[in-house]
Image (cartoon, rainbow, N blue to C red; front, side):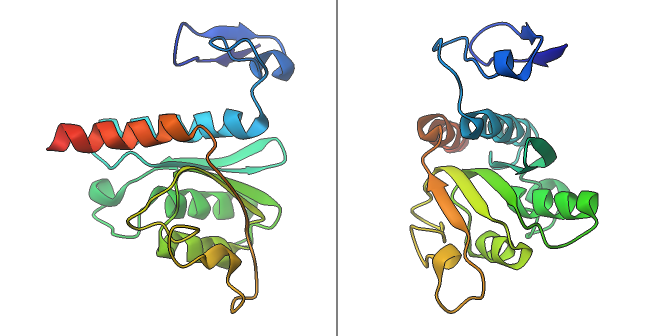
Length: 178
């Protein structure tokens, strides 16, 4: 049996992946992108609880979760410990290869220049992110790193998956800090 925790209600115990793909709140199937973005959102919430900026990322290949991480910059005293970087490192270790071809990266926030560059270096196939980062986003808000002609790899991008939930989490965090 597989357990799925629904943020809106109580846990649902499911017997199959098909059943796990249904949302208790909406009564419709969750897309695979929504399913994995929910994993990233939980990592972002965990990061927030730890006093970090609430960004979460997971790396998936096929239907297998390779890695999930939240921001750890303060925890690790490491300016490179963004959720994307931490998750990419863990996924590479799990696969035994720094090239993460055929993987999909889910991030609650549009990656910065450092993280977008890491997606290129890792040869990630697809990036799915929730909320745009008008200040530091380097995928579409600024720079368009994932689609730069000067680079030898392109990362396909899907934006706006569970956008309002991702954006609200960030807004709540910064509102509390003011």
